[in-house]
Image (cartoon, rainbow, N blue to C red; front, side, top):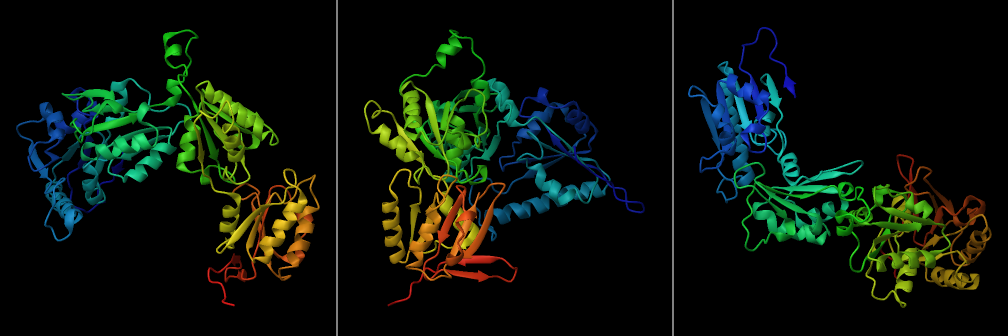
Length: 521
């Protein structure tokens, strides 16, 4: 309940404004407080389209008296076009101002005004437009109501969210790409405002992989109620009213305990081929995780990966986690593919971008061999460490650049040295991965010597450590001053080209950038 105080002493006594939520449609779901406020009001206001029929009024009809003053707030437009000079939004703004003035006249006369609305007044409700224009001027109280979301979940008998699940509520009027991304990223979802948007919503559900989980609820608790699997609703032949929602319910509830051998257990047993999705988590944590990757991690039945990367993924009931150290990439790939052959949905968790010195190569390589060639494999991109570090420093990779790993665990140092010479002589900026560790202490010094054969001593070098993590640090030094003892396995180096600039800004920070224009020879 929210309440504004009445005007102070010495001001004229006015009426009181109520925003009254009526619930999802069944009059018996109105709250006792809502009924009491309606009974005590002088004026009952409600919104309607130009046909004059008001769902809110029909819900509250049995509580209306003959001596109630009724104010029908009739929208000038709903979905049709308008010749208003301000367009659709301008027509509605003028309407809300005029409607608020009508109600203000009653309030100024000392009358109590109840603006009734289906659902909850402040949840996608028409009342909120009156609230914004009147609540600061008159004593106001909002009576909450049961939302259509709660009603839909109740009619389906499906929990909306459990434990740490995130529920996302989306208007179907969003662009399809935005709907798809948000549906992919969330645990559970409700999409409202269907009607003409239904074909877009259904495509977004399918593109995000949520269609098999989704349910359709039409006119929950009202006459003509309908519930079904969303996949069963045909956008070409079925009529979908505005007062319909789609629900993607709790996964935790679906994965709750089932007695071995029970019908429920048999019904949810894996069937057919599974899938392996290689997911890039970015350089640190959830802030740089893409919606598609977030959705894939939530949907997986098994997570496979290096322990450090698995620890970045929230623990979800029902998921199996298979952790290992960082030196058994092929074994991890085989484990994931074996699980998928048994019908499991598997996410292989990789840091950064899985295709940049990470797990995608191992999985694709093993999946190209018998007996795994028929297992579906997808690779989802992630923010790679080079791009994350470059963003923190400014724009040092703004022109052509090369990415090289200094680790000689999987290739000889002679190959690394040859590539460093080639990239440096081509005047490319360099992103150097895996520059050093406790067992590799000399590579950074040797790389510095090689690069100084082609670069000026004052070439900017960025030392980016633990980017996105709690110990993040970004420093810029001259190439000649690069100290190998300051580099560890959590550090990435970016070495500028001959054109790279390091500039001290007025706020004391240093920004490094490589211009996109290159001088003509």
